[in-house]
Image 1 (tube, rainbow, N blue to C red):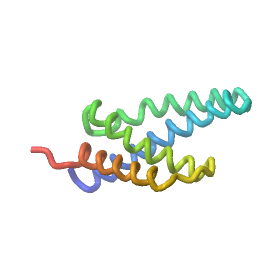
Image 2: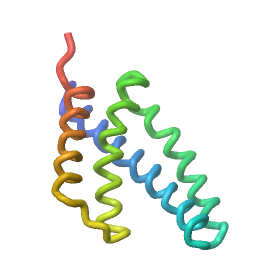
Image 3: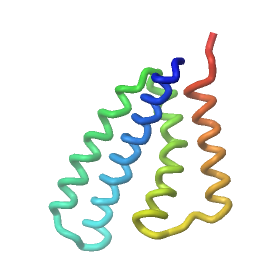
Length: 112
């Protein structure tokens, strides 16, 4: 896989993650914290976009969604640290690195 294709794929994973986590967070704020229903509508729209973004990946469905799970773990920890101010501990960081290693193997290992 060319370096440009890898960078594009990584950018799509990040975009999908931001859409899923961001949209879900807006719904969370609406339901759990009693914020306005407009947040729920906006969150739902962003979650819809999340459903589209992974289809732009060059790999097959199962591989994309399995690998995305690892990216989602790391992005969730980053969202928690940056937006919610919940710092991950060393086990969270170790687990996130293991997830990214798995994503790298699944998505970017050379295949014959």
